[in-house]
Length: 82
Image (cartoon, rainbow, N blue to C red; front, side):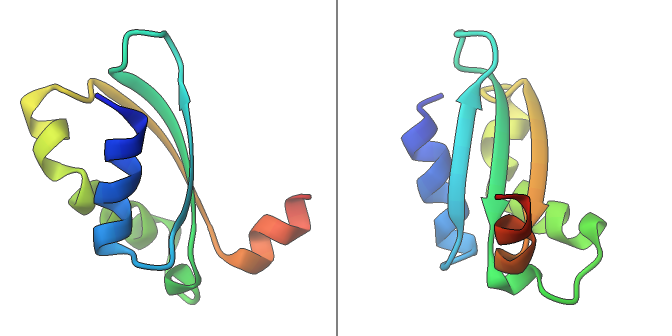
């Protein structure tokens, strides 16, 4: 799967998302994805991950994305890591 397509799918669901993707194996089916969004404010990590997984439901179900390492952050959390 193309990383740009993953970014677009996430941004269709989470409009302000900043998405950082790493192809972990070079096979375009194992990804590490960091999503930063103000829409994560006040949500538990589980709900944040569900939002992203919902956006990627079709490629996850079809196996087009075989493995997804996911990290979700608010903009403040992102800046605190810098």
